[in-house]
View 1: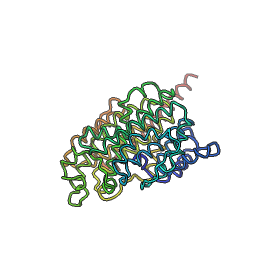
View 2: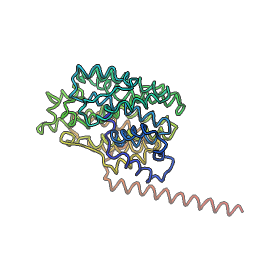
View 3: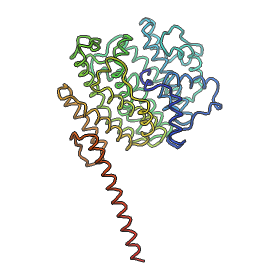
View 4: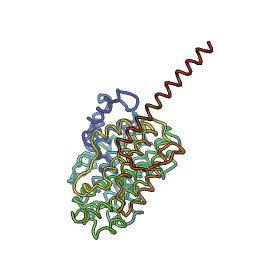
Length: 418
C-alpha cells in the first residue's frame, strides 16, 4: 500500500486546489468538516494525509460513512505494509506478525514500537486506528478484517520466496492491491451504491488493483533495489541480466529499458478490464475514486516507457499534470480519451528494435479500439503534433460552421411556414 499512495506530495493542498478549481461542484465532495469529527478520527485523517499523499484526496472525495471506512482501511493496510517493507524486522518476527495482523484490530492496546520505516507512526499509534475500526459498522469491519487477513498471508508467502513467474507476479499484486479492489467492489454493491455485478465480477475488480500495483512496482525499481526489495518477476528479467540488481548498472541500460518495456506491455493488458469496470459504475463519487488512480497509472507508465531514468532516479508525473487528470477523469468517455492519449504516447516511443515491440503495438491498438466510437479504425500514421492540432482545430471549426448553417436553415424554414 505504500506504493499505492505515492503519486504526489501535499495531499491536502492538492485536494483544496481541486475543490477550488472545480468551483465546489458535484464532481468532488467538499473538504471535511473537521469540527464534526472526533479527536481520534481527526488524527486518522492526519495520518492519511501524511502517508497516502495524493490518494488522500481521492479517499476524501467519497461520501460520508464510506469515506471514514476507506480512510481506516487505508491506514490498517498502510500499517501492514509498513511491517512488510521494514527490512530491519527479522523474518522470524515478521512472518507471524503478517499472519496475525488482522487479529490486532481487536486488541485495543496492540502497537509496534520497533519499526524504522518512514511511516512508523501508524504502527506506534495503532490503538487509535484500531479503535476507529471497531467503531465502524459491521459491514465495514468485516470487509477490512477479511482483506487484512488475506493480504497478510499473501505478503508472508512472498517474504519467503521471490516473485519468479509472471503468474506469481499477478498473484503477488492480487494479494497487495487486487484484494482491495475486490473488497471495495463488494462493499459498493452491498451498500447499493453500484449494481450487484460490480461486486460479483471479481476478475475485473482484481484488475483494477493489479494494474496500479504493477505500474508502481515498475516505476519503483531503483527505490526497491536500494531497500533490498525485489518485485520484478524473474521470468522476465532473467532474459536480460544475471541478477535483477545488474539492470541498474550503466553498461546495462539498453537491456534494462527493454526489460522494463516488456513489463509495461504486460501491465497494459489490464486496461480493457479497467475500462469495462469503470463503464459499469453509476455513482459519481465512486467513479472518481476508482478512475483517478487508473489514469494516474497510465500516465506514469507513459512517463516510464523506454525511459532510462527509471534506473537512475525517480520518474514522476508532474503535479499540474496530476491535477488535470483528477479534474478530467469524471466520466467514462473522458477516461477513454485519457487512456487513448497516453497509450498513443507509448506507441510513438516504441523502438523498432525492442524485443516486445510487436506485442506492445498490438495491445495498444486493442486498447485504442475500445476507446474510440464503434466502427472507428485506429490509424498510426506518424503525423506531427502541429499537423494533428491543426486537424483537430479544422474539425472543430467545420462542426461549428455546419451547426450554424443548420440553425440558420431551420430558422428560414420556420419563417416560410409562418
